[in-house]
Image 1 (cartoon, one colour):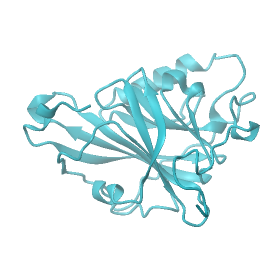
Image 2 (image 1 turned 30 degrees about the vertical axis):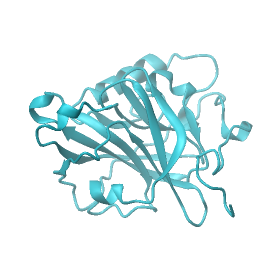
Image 3 (image 1 turned 30 degrees about the horizontal axis):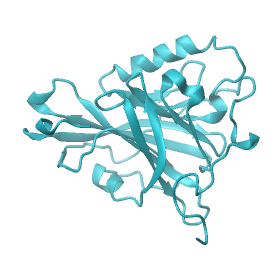
Image 4 (image 1 turned 90 degrees about the horizontal axis):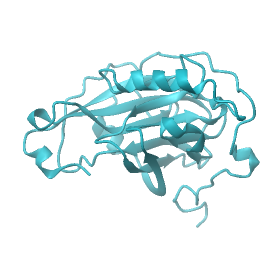
Length: 238
């Protein structure tokens, strides 16, 4: 929880475009990168290109470090990406869920299920996790994974640190697939000034999808997929 005294001075926030990644199937995983193969399966999501954004807060004299309040990923076809702002993201039809992301390393993210290596070997993990730490230690405190072998997606530092953070979802009214997902680490309802400077065109960062290694664990096709009720929203026709 954010300390009340943090709002004694004016707090500013900016929207940081992180780039994009590809959801190769109808499942994304939300979790701490230290335990990425034990994250929360989110399904069904709309496959294809997803864009990622982080909301970075500056608490002025209260805290010399910037903090990430939100990590957002959205399908390229679901949300207008030009002139996107924090206010426009907040105004999307988010549905709260009963799902939470446990954070123990001070970081969290959304990852393509198909790119999480399966099996018992974890030779890939050290290099991948080191890269994730480098990303969250950078000036944006967040970014896209995928330039080393391992899970591909968006990752960020987690607000004030470890904890359990809620996952919100935006569903397509037509297909009922998730087309946007949001992790909120800091409650900005006390009032945060938006100082974003977002380019008119979305970033064009892409990558070559990693081949699936081994057999994915807890894959939705194995009977662990989540339907609308699992996401904590009313089922169709309810």
